[in-house]
Length: 186
View 1: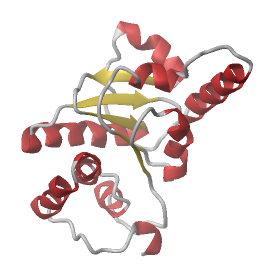
View 2: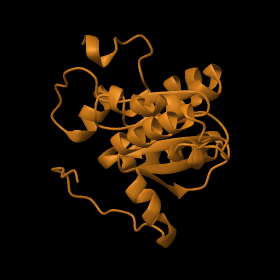
View 3: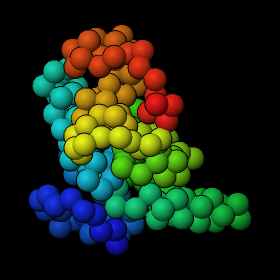
C-alpha cells in the first residue's frame, strides 16, 4: 500500500475490477484510439487528459488505473520464465491491453523508470512519463507541469504517439514552449 499526502476522492471501482486491482491494473474507462495508464494521484491528470483528447481533438482514450507497476513487472517476469519452459501464457498487461488499439501512454508521479518496468509486456508503442529530475515548484499543479505529467503534457504525449502534427498543434493550443529543456536538465 502506498500512502500519499494528497487527499482527493477516489473513483469507485467496478465490481469486476477487484482482480485487476490486486494484479496491478484495471480499466476505468473504455476508449478506442489509444490507452492511458495512470498511477497514484496522477490518475486524475490522466482522466483530465482523456477529457482534453475527447473535447479538443475528438480522440477516444481508454483509461486504466495502475495500482502497481512492480506487481505488473513481477507477473511479466513470471510469465517470461514460464514461457521459457513451454507454458504459453500471457502477462496481465498483455491480457488487459491485447484487445485494445493505439499507443499506450503511462504517467505516474514516480520517475519514468517505474512506469518503464512494464515496457516488455506492452504489445505496441509505449510512452512512459514520470517525475525525472529535481522540481522546484510551489504548488502541485506547477510541479506536475514542470515534470510534464499534467493533463496537457499527457495529452501532448498521446497526440505525438498518434501523429506528431497533432502534437505540434497541441503545444500551441496549450501554450507549452516546444524548445524548453527537459525537466532532468533544468
